[in-house]
Every structure is written in structure tokens, then in C-alpha cells.
Length: 142
Picture 1 (cartoon, rainbow, N blue to C red):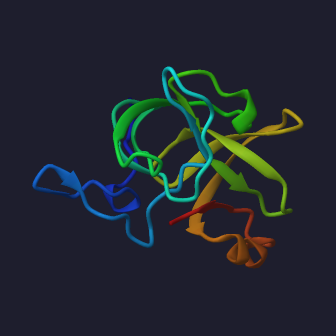
Picture 2: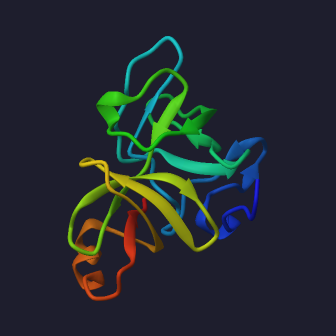
């Protein structure tokens, strides 16, 4: 699996078997596709823990459950059952999707098919404009 991403970038604290509310540095899930359902996009879903290099436990805002999904570097409309995506904003404001997380970097794919590797920072849509000269990508947090 390689080096897992830092726990401080995920919400994995459990109180009585129920996950705590995500903090300000929790990676937001852009969209997920539950088995037997359809692609769901909501701003309150987040990564709880890492299960493998591309498998993560995701907290679903829609029903407050936690399910293990496979990370895919595709737009939300292209997801299949059991998959989820995380959007990144590149330094030139191009939208991409994470193909793989590392401790301080991500591999990403843009909608045009360009691939790359970059360091990432956690922020909001408003903070990505300040990253233009750094070459880092921004991942939304909740």
C-alpha cells in the first residue's frame, strides 16, 4: 500500500461506535456511488479512514453511514457502483480528480486527460487562488 495518508487529514475518531463530526482539515468527498443507488454529490461527505492504496471508508452525509469505496479519477457522472471521487483544483484553476493519495502528494487526472503529481493543501474554493505560483493543488475540506 505504500505510505498511508496522515490520520490528521481524515476524521477517524469514534465515540461509542459513531464517528465524530469532521474537523476543518477533513478531506471532502466530491461524489460517491453506493451499491444499488445512484451517484450522489453532497458537500458533507468525507474520508474517515484508509483501507488500501485506493480504498477508503467514506462517511455518507445522505444517511450518516460509513461504507468502503474505491477511489476513481473520474468526474461524478462517470462513477460506477462502489466508487467515489475527490476533486482537486490545480494552480491554474483547472479541475482534476485524484487518482491516488500519498502522504503529501496526489496523482491526478484532469477532465482533458492530462495527468500529473503535485503536493496538495487542504482548503476551500476561495483559498485556491493564492496557490497559483506554488504549483500545489487544493483539495476541499469540510
